[in-house]
Image (cartoon, rainbow, N blue to C red; front, side):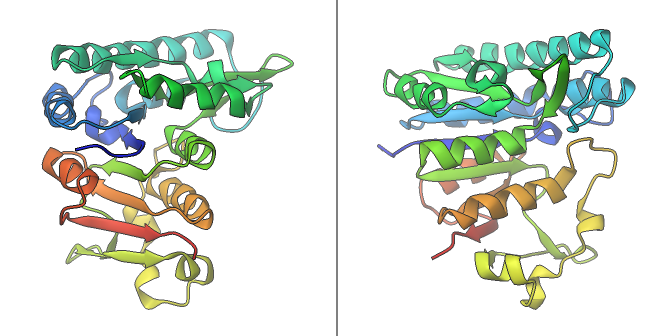
Length: 264
């Protein structure tokens, strides 16, 4: 089945065990790779840091704020992300796919996204290559660095590449309106996200958020999904630990999750 470009974010809570430092969730990575190998789609993958990048970011007190962080911390965070990226790359290769790891620094100029560089990613997909990029500690200027999250990368790439589908794979089934009953909000309209008038949008962000996540947890994902929806594109939140949901979302089949409807 042929589709236009799909961009999918593999959350750190899906591809790692965030409660255990430096531990990849090989089962989840294998399951997702197996599903993707069955789909003929132009694809770009973004992944989070989970128990790799986030673990060291906390250790060295590094955040999304631009400043002069400890040089050793910068190196260790970057090194850990390369290791996680290689695990994902190697697994995708094992399933016959053609991934190509790309540091986010390669398409930034002075910390700002370069449209020309990012458009090269789309050209790569036309040659059956899957660019795989990730959140990282990126150099901006004057010896200052910042943690660029995978969630922010999703917004940057989506705005420039105009994909047909934008998917965030989480470790939950979507956004919950009621955390006790885990009632999923199936659809959120852009206008309601901005105004907060719809009762369904009044979900408890604190209950949905991992407060130890230096890049903002689910709250940041909601913020970035809203920015993307403002451009008129739909954004899908699904459970990446159930890889069939990824397949269903890509193939326009019924799936369990939350859709942020793009601005009309």
